[in-house]
Amino acid sequence: MKYLLALLAGAGCLFGFDYHGCALAPDNLHGWVVCIDTVLILNTSDGGQSWQVQSTPNGSNKFYDVTCVDELQAWTSGDLGQVLHTDNGGLDWIVQPITLSKNATRIQFLDVNYGWVVGGDGTIGRTTDGGNYWDPNFTPYFRAEYYGLWFIDQYEGWIVAGLPDSLLNGQGYIDHSTDGGINWDSLYQSTGYQDFFDVRFFDNQNGIVIGGDESNYLPVIWKTTNGGLNWSAVAAPANTYYLRALDFAGNCGWAVGRFGSIIHSANAGNSWAFQTNPATTTLFDVDFSDSLHGIACGQNIILYTTDGGQTWNQSAVEENNSREPDGRFFLQAYPNPARRRIEFKLNPGKVHSAERIELKIYDISGRLIRSFTLCPMPSALCWNGTDQSRRPVPAGVYLVRLSNAGNTAQIKLTLLK
Image 1 (tube, rainbow, N blue to C red):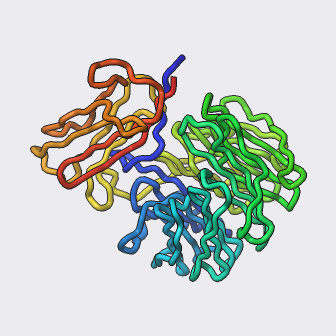
Image 2 (image 1 turned 180 degrees about the horizontal axis):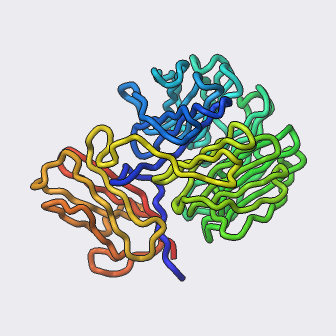
Image 3 (image 1 turned 135 degrees about the vertical axis):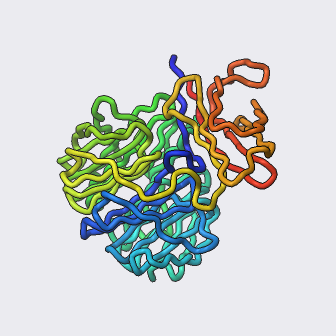
């Protein structure tokens, strides 16, 4: 069987960043994209055609998601449960007080007051005053790594969980609350390799959940007509892979995922069709302001459409891709996906070329698998998937770390057999 390499999360690269969350305002023009591999918020005022970097406060963490209620009010969620808020279109971002035990992976606001954020270890935050105060809550499912949420009003909502590229079973959860997110009941927990990453409900009975199967990268699309008590599978189009995000504008919906997958539904998720687009890497998020205007983002790419996805265009990003904003060196595995031969792109940033730099590869248990000493530091390095004794490593999750005395950059990889 072929080997595929999937980059999960990283720390920038020579030619782009991992854009992980996006939001487009109701005016179809203003929006934001945030990065998971560096502290970076981008803003658009032309519907996603071009993007500019916005300033972030000191102490900001890397971002998973962003949401907005209009062109002025927006919130981000990120590492260590941090939430940032702007009420002036991103001219100023303010850190909001919130305590979560793990990363905040998805955020939703109904209006300027009511909002929720979900994260790992079964945690969820809830605010009724725009985030001036966040109430931390815990579901009974401490193993759940929540990646998706959707509330239809102040009281009733659903959250879903998965763990990307974990190669573990039983990670998929679908949970339901009727009291604004204070208490949660389990609707479903997978026993296999199904992961759930996003959810949308049209009312308190009809909803859609999307995700993927870890064992084969196939997509998961489930539909319910009784509030989530029962689910039925919906067929995905050919060439669709492991889905990561979902959005609807009325009955029109879009889901995005691995290897540039974008699919579209015109009938509230009952059937789906593939949409051609320029992406070949994983798309992490999608957001539509109406049935025509939308944006999507992923590894090294931002897309926009003005015709409901019949045509997806690649955005122009005004940023210096030769280094991270703070000047640190960093790396990325390329291409993605790849076969057994893996090329690491390396950028020394402000590091002196004569300094001793090491690239080390660890397995999921933390055991060192392979190490390279780089002096002087090259711009690229190839690894053929073998350990220090030149034996092929097994399928699994690996951590790659590039470091010297004062700098560290790392990425996660999953090698599937």
